[in-house]
Image (cartoon, rainbow, N blue to C red; front, side, top):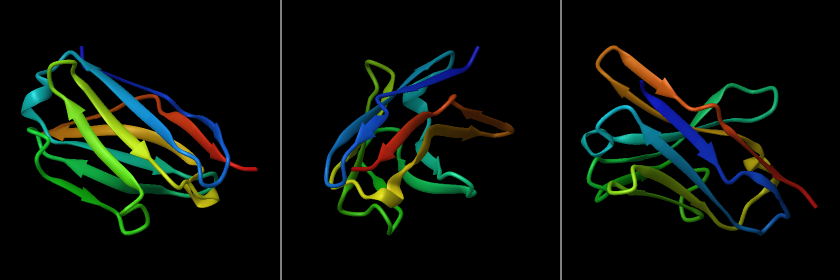
Amino acid sequence: QVQLVESGGGLVQPGGSLRLSCAASGFTFSTLPMSWVRQAPGKGLEWVSDIDRGGGATVYANSVKGRFTISRDNVKHTLYLHMDNLKSEDTAVYYCFFTAGTLDAWGQGTLVTVSS
């Protein structure tokens, strides 16, 4: 069965860094583009970043461009999001996500709190 498990969230001070991971199983990870999305408290889902199946092409939301880096390890079946220069507005639950035909798959999310 398809499973996405995020980890790496936590409390960090403004200007700090975190690396999120998403461990994938139950599908052929290397054949699918992957995404990170987030949901801030009391707000809707916000797309953060996409990466193609080989990891060679990435796209970012303007709000995180230059601060976040998406990557993947197709051998380890893991998606990453490295976040630098974190701001209070980055506080959210972060989810990894993919869509394949009629299937949409999400993890349980990992909470990132940016606060002094």
